[in-house]
Amino acid sequence: MRLLLKSLTPEERRVEFPIEINKIKPYLGGREDLELVGPFAGEAWVYKMNATVHLKGVIRGTVKATCGRCLDMFEADVAIRFNQTLRPPESKEAGEEEDLTTGFHDGYAIQVDDIVAAQIGLKIPQVFLCDDECLGLCPSCGKNLNEGPCECSPQAK
Image (cartoon, rainbow, N blue to C red; front, side):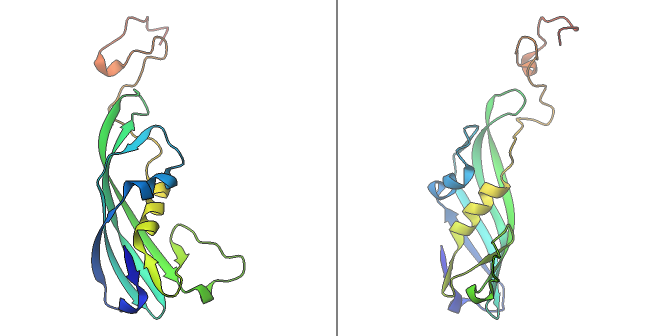
């Protein structure tokens, strides 16, 4: 979704937009423990003060993830909040880089889905758990302890 800067005002405006999964994938760094099953959608509030654009909102979607304890695959809904300030290019100081909350626009428009795709890559959890009470795998025999106790002796665990 592209927003023209001239269409933005100091009054906060709500926008909704879909996010294509193939726009998000490059920001995930080739993670093999995570599959985006979508759909992903964003909801944001945007306004402009002088030449600075403020964008805040939430991205929601569904992923298929590998549990960090038992290694089972499961689906999980994710909601990632973001808050981004985009300044005009002439305000950039020598050597200044974009970061998690501050970036720069081109003076003409902002590409909202690119901004939030990067936010997903930065803020999506590194480890997913199928359940907070997941027992994981037996360190000796590798049995999934969520399916019941294993035959290992207590000393082997």
